Image (cartoon, rainbow, N blue to C red; front, side):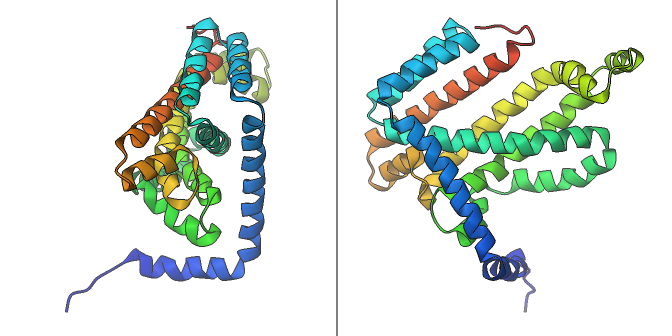
Length: 280
């Protein structure tokens, strides 16, 4: 008789206990997440598509420059011409919300980890596990606790996007030149000013890379999110796969690429501009 060990036999009772004793809490969290996503999606879908495209293009032009604005116009226009506008807006709302939540979690933890080696050592094996586990595994407990829909997709996307942002935030703040910190302390600058005026600008190039990785990994979860009823372009890719419709799957896949380019170039240019980066 061979001995078999399954971590699922240990975690399943814990998940069942959470579902039985904290069902009210999970229900409230689910409703709040649905309300935020629903409001964001309604904001994007209520105006005509051409109005949204022009507003985004003008805003990007003011924030970054004409070249990035032209790219934003082409990316959104492609989603519109492919007759995937509602699905694209659902995907943008899901990814944007997930990335904002992941950054809000990862950046403060990364800053603290860069200052406390013990905290960084404690987080390292957790991050290793989070980055090694296949992404669809995150959907299993999320679906058990929150049922099918956009809520488990959003939470799984946040969990999947936190590790790269946290790691690169820690690396970025550890690489800040010591002489800059000593200069800030020598002139009597308070810690808040040192953080915002010295450390953040110095760490910005690495932070931009972390944000890029967070965005790409969040978009990678979009297709898997379609398997749990999250809708959006992931559902279209899944539908094209199950029905063997190559045209539908290809159009949805290219729309995901267009959204990835939109997020990447706009975020990169917007963050680099205050630091004197290129507006191209």
